[in-house]
Image (cartoon, rainbow, N blue to C red):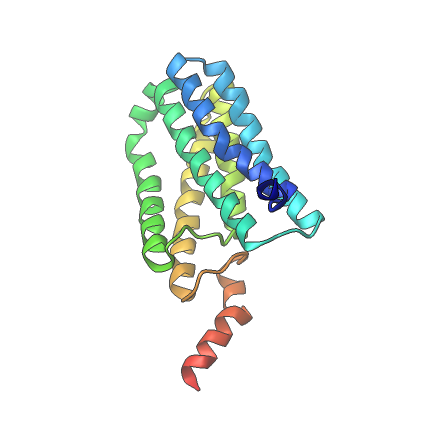
Length: 200
């Protein structure tokens, strides 16, 4: 019972996205596009809910940020897998653009794992905007079909956001959570204190 008490309500919304992955894989395996689409809608909704609750109830934590990041990453991977099955023609036709966006994301993950031993949890403004556009595109294509202007917007934002994420990794020697962006990182006491220690 102690295990359940160690996590707050926002954490459990993040856990949902992680636990939903095997269910989504089953829907893909069975070819249940409609069920897959509705469960993806729920997963993306929990991403908005957990962040809102964490801020509203003031229960944000490093652990919660990490759980949120894991949930986001798994949701992105399962979304791409689902699109590869249910929208194969679209994915094949736009393979190069998808690769252009996805390869830097993998590189960013590898850099973070090497430097911090775990994924980042900066949750920048740009990352949040990119996640919203990504969710909008994935859900729209699953329910209604592809919209190319939304697809291109998602790709561009994804690349820019990944570049910012990589930049932030090199700006912070130690793992931190809750960095709004490069501008705010330049004025972040957590980074400035580290810089001051090196120069004393």
